[in-house]
Length: 394
Ligand code: RFL
Ligand code: PHB
Image 1 (tube, rainbow, N blue to C red):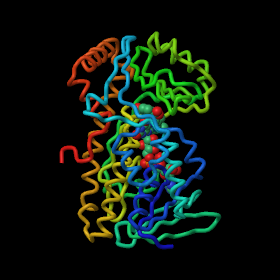
Image 2 (tube, protein in one colour):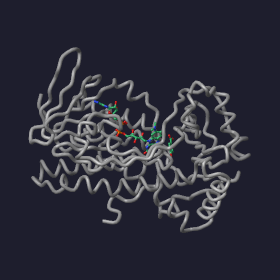
Image 3 (spheres, protein in one colour):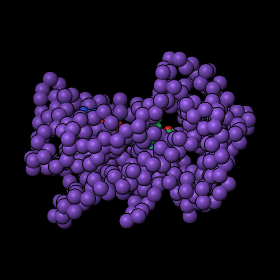
Image 4 (tube, rainbow, N blue to C red):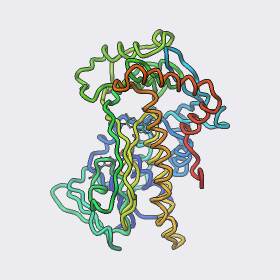
């Protein structure tokens, strides 16, 4: 088999890249380790920046998102038992975020890909990448007991944190920066009306909590838990009881409980691999970087990598220019580090760090008090939360 771009991974990065390349008349094959249903079963991100919604429109897959997604012009910060609204819309001169689940984004991209008759190879095993330092890279995989090979011009490593692309780069060619947090997020999805019409980020002495949503009838809640906890330790009742204890009295009153549709624990990590280009192979999305989910930046960063990568490939094929390809890594990393900084800072502000003792809690509360009562403090949070513009600082 031969293609122009072999994409490894059919998560949001790989699917979005495939769609943008297809729109530009560039040939791509996607190779995915899991089944389509498995990919759709992962409950993850919920908040899209405008840069991401614009990109989904550009890819021609934004219709359902505009119909069903919820536009949010603010969110609440809860500390010392009281809620304070961050007015994103006012503080950023009219920007909002879109609450629309990653599952739905993935669904829309899969449907578009299928409708266009494009090739995605699901349930491929033993995927491996070869000769990416040469002009003739290859991808090999096994499917139904047979070995297959794809010859291509470029490999796009969209295969997530545990993928094969980054792992195939010689250690001397890559530098990795990592911080692992001692706690995770226990997430619960339920068909209950959200406790509030906007998101609530809660700092409490019992640990962080987040009240999010997927629709007017489906809620997504998260609790900070030690990484030693397991999902089996947490009955639905225990989850609701603990959430209640981390909320303010009004929210506690409003909270509607019900059976969990899904529960899982996600570890929290800050991670960046540099560079993001290795000859003819490029990393994009979680394959190159991870942020703790507090700032809702992971999927949005993946989308901007894909924006830069698709433009670079389009420039290569249509304009015969490799400027985009040559700048890809530096361009992405500048944006990534800014989002890493915000996600790390917001995580530190909102979570409980027992090792910092009571003074740590007091200092967080003082900083939160400053932010919600200072125009400049609140604007800085808002500007980062809605997402910095694509050309910020350029
Ligand atoms: P993905 O989604 O991990 O997809 C990678 C795909 O590659 C496949 N794969 C392979 N395929 C072939 N061969 C191999 N050897 C392979 N190895 C792996 C995998 O099966 C998979 O299908 O990465 P991608 O596409 O870069 O997308 C990144 C996003 O999924 C991620 O950044 C976000 O989910 C992060 N995130 C959030 N991001 C936001 O922007 N806003 C949010 O509100 C938000 N909330 C979250 C989140 C992530 C969370 N978790 C679970 C870590 C909330 C949570 C709880
Ligand atoms: C979610 O709805 O899953 C979600 C929302 C905001 C975050 C993280 C996750 O910061």
